[in-house]
Length: 236
Length: 257
Image 1 (cartoon, rainbow over the protein chains, first blue to last red):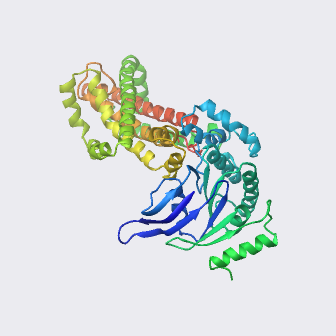
Image 2: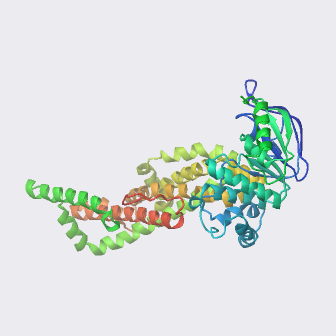
């Protein structure tokens, strides 16, 4: 995945510039976290990566990417299995074939027994796991995760971060994780890119060369977290 | 409140109204041709049961057929308008204008054009209900979270698969709401259509002719049957909604919701 000096504006002459001169690279199998203050164009960045928007200037060269949206966006009328299988049905597979492919993942993702439960009957953490599974089943080499755990309470979020780190070790993918949670970025990513506020631009990069699993209390994790916060201008 | 107790408040209000009505007719000495008492309506219901029943069958089949026709046509048009921006812009103003057509003027013209049979009734009912269904259904399609079609696009779904898997199911509750909104209007529309001219009879025809023959109680009985039929249709839609769209149905303590 490569993004070169991308600029994206919305509206006319008095519009907003969401991104300006933004560059980003990720190599295959790398987990890249992008952190920045609210409104720094993180969601725009992901939509550019997924081909949902075109840049006004600069170049985007990406492998096909599947999106995991900020809110789970599960279909309220469908059971968990059908929700996870949606990505398969979207490319034309029949209901039975899509279910058969999605079903084996439910045990692995701690969702066994909840195949028929509608989203309203699932906990927040389970909904995010179904949502992640749906994105994974899209079969794209690149996963674009948009603040996947922002809507969860702190305890569930911590659990889900541990879970996602584990899943990404087992099923290696190229990941672009957009988040405003610096700790999440340091726990999950191989590399953290720090963005400025609007217009968004990458200002710094931190390599996270720490062994997995990482603990949020590790001195190295804490130090990197402090360093990233410093770069965001909220270090003190 | 327990399930079987739920209709109680509605029944109590009904009983109080009927009691007051009965009492007023008995005490004021008003001529039953001007205002029949509830018991007079009930006995008319029994005495004229043959003609009322056959008239009901005529009206009910017109109403159900007309509503089904309207629903199918409305669904097709709404889907076409959803997919084609040009079609939507061309037809939306017309859709709104059609809601303002005064049926009492329009219905006799339709009888001129289409005769005294079934077709003018179906057209009147369809015109009255068609566009509310189109508008509520389009509103349902428009209220879908815009992130969902984007998500489907990253999963390589074309517009048709996005529609079938996401947009259509999401808009189903709006479709049922549209049907519930129009079902009472279809009853009135059928009455007006029958009054414009009919060879098959029907409850609307009785409402037109009975008062002229001083059969006021029979006219009240016909109106009562029409009201009950409207309630029945509404209740059937509510049951269908609960059965088929349980995810959209939020239980409340009301009688009909």
